[in-house]
Length: 275
Image (cartoon, rainbow, N blue to C red; front, side, top):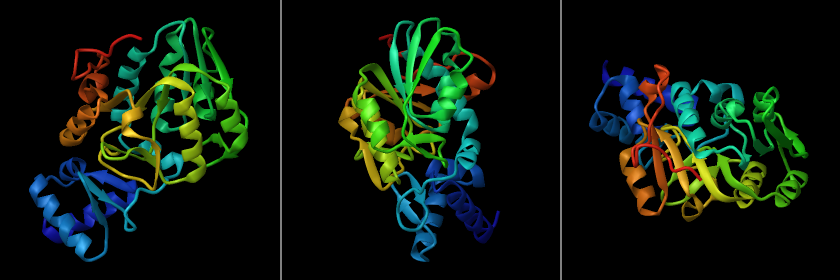
């Protein structure tokens, strides 16, 4: 692939994803990290994108909020592997809080096997995934419907979450860095995600490799308040190491294992600890 073609493809990937990691770009265009890093510098000099640690974002410097249908197509295999591994952080008898997002929806779909579980959520998609699960009680918050993410936001949602105390909160987002933690570009979503984090004893972030090392406008959960990160094996290792240094327990799902139907394992300890 010629340099001009490669850079055009990089621009297409950044624009379609809003933010994308260096490693993912290199894989998509079939070039080395060094070559892609050089391309990013050239494209940034032309004002076509903004570089960030471990990747690139759309001009303006911060990840934007994609429509739900678009997000569902990004890193689908990784999200499935993350969802599979994240269920090992749940036990029968738990009361958990689950936020909105395509990764949390994939996670919710795997909770149907539990026989005694309470799930509090502001996500219509999460609730829908659990509607037929006989052993799962679903508490759906009220509030103002944000159609782009199929979830409720606003003061009513936040007040409902303020009356909840769960064992763990499971959140996604638009970006995750060791420096700032979890972030999102929308104020209403940010406020609800903060309320979800405050409604549980521990916070679990579900973030695929396209989000790790990416930053968005508004911080939702500071790094020191994140207990667990469940990600996939394409995530930037340097960023994961930095998160570990901040005390985050990192669980890495093997994407190829999830495709074959085998249980993905955590990089740190073989499998996540049970609560």
